[in-house]
Image (cartoon, rainbow, N blue to C red; front, side):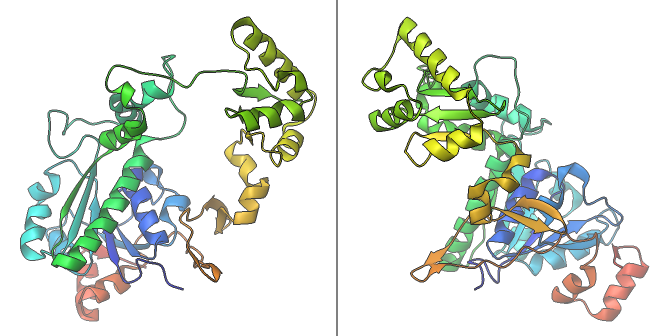
Length: 372
């Protein structure tokens, strides 16, 4: 069965993870994604590895060449969506930006992903994920014990998901109106959106999730960590009984009693390996979970059962997290394709944009495009 975006063509002008996260999600939903890259580019530059490149096509075009914009225009006219992450106004300054596209191809959906958005006093400021996560209020909301910073990007994939959601909405709108639109996606605003369920953070009434014996991280006998989130009476009961601490079931320890309960629970968990506790207490409803490293995921029973990781050319990467079902059961999604070589699809993509074989050879001979 084809994906819900089957037939949708996306031109990816981005070189960095925000755009790559967005377009790999669109690819997982069935869209054809063509990545435009300069000839001779390193496809792994900018943190865009196999996991963010899989299943896409690559066309090598030198946009600095005098005829580069000509090719870009033809490619843009042949797709439904264009995704870019240039600074505001940069593409207009080069001779082909959203304003040009809106006049020449009004049905095109143009998605711009930037750190702070297309306008405002910070619009032209450079930054990285940490910049936007910090500005958004999310960094401080996660952990007020500064200084610290996450070891994984946060604002970048959040912004990419907003971009992909905006693209899907714009496609739906275009089906009604026939017109495209310009999507202005800010990574900082996307991270701030995560505070929607914590409006106290914004209105000066910040409230953090308390650290209590029932909601804690515990170290087990093998040195690995587990989480407990037994906030309800039934989950607290299952946790205490599973650990052999039945006398704690009918109490919610506070103050010094809470400290004592925490020590007793910690001592109990320290007697056995983490996997044994999870396997035993999970089915009993104790709201327990393993603290996995990424390298632990391939052996995790839940990950294995759902096929959450997929093998792409010998590299394990996260699969499509959007699962579809019918009354007959799960929809079998097509396997992701390999990461493309730079320019590996140039001839095919240009032909689909209306170029003849002779025109394509001439562009290559002039150094405008490249292919194997």
